[in-house]
Image 1 (spheres, rainbow, N blue to C red):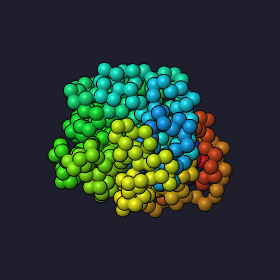
Image 2 (cartoon, rainbow, N blue to C red):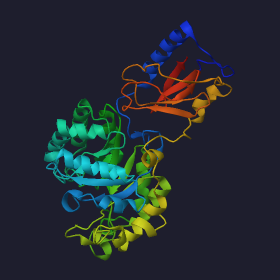
Image 3 (cartoon, helix red, strand yellow):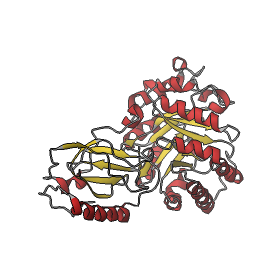
Length: 426
């Protein structure tokens, strides 16, 4: 969006009553056009996922069955050695808030996005409500809000079999997501396809309708690519299916995949083609699983002892040796590496055009105010030349701006690329 409230060749210095008037107009503009919502974490826009600093994130990582085989969290630093930027964390409704908090914290401390998921409803649609009950418990909500900046929340693993209808998928997930939002959970939620996660067609055909059910419109869809040759999944079918998903302009990932469905020639999964095409099409993926602990499908264990040094077979290939491996394609955004937004962030060109010849007055000052209007969070402040100056997040509960900033006019923009002109004066 271009802002035509200023002439391109003018610089502004606003004081006194002029400040009050323009501030009021700017505030009205922001409220009217931004549709900002609470929360400052990962979000979807079109078919891509972005972090809180508006940096595109292409997920590359692994699943880890911590609730069953790695409760001490020692696998997270081992996984981090691959360069992964995400771990999908298997949790249970019996896990305490303290345990959940520990896993999420340790994952993020190792520079990876945590994606907890509940497994109790695998293949069982009737169990979906129990998952929402867990996520909306007051003690669990406290944990989720604590980690909102970097959390991806996979509501449930492979909920429902192949009998789940489109209406059930849309309406039952939709009502549960609304309940979560009503409890103040504004993290990006991840929703699996039906038929034990394998049915990407459900996402392609009905994902837009489910996305519209979310008041935050912040759903990342996930398909589990257990697509063996025996079910007609040739290399070409994998390519065509991924392209069909891209054509929907919905944000989706491959939340699980392995090398084989069963140990026969026709049980092979075209995972190499899957990885290659995901790289070409900028689709995130998370391999199943770090291991050990798969039973009876022991071949899906990427490691023999949970350590980086014990990577083996297809797991070694997926993690490090393939050209499309985690090591060779994963990128950790600045917000994960440093905990802050990168200083090089800039506005899109179309938003910068209005400021082309504007100049920020040279006199620097320490801004001890103004106080941003209550609730104005999840926003980024840019200088007149489009460079990121500061991020307003839910952590800034006082709403005070404390960075050294020049006197002048700045752009305040929400995560969707909308915003208003906001003046700052001495």
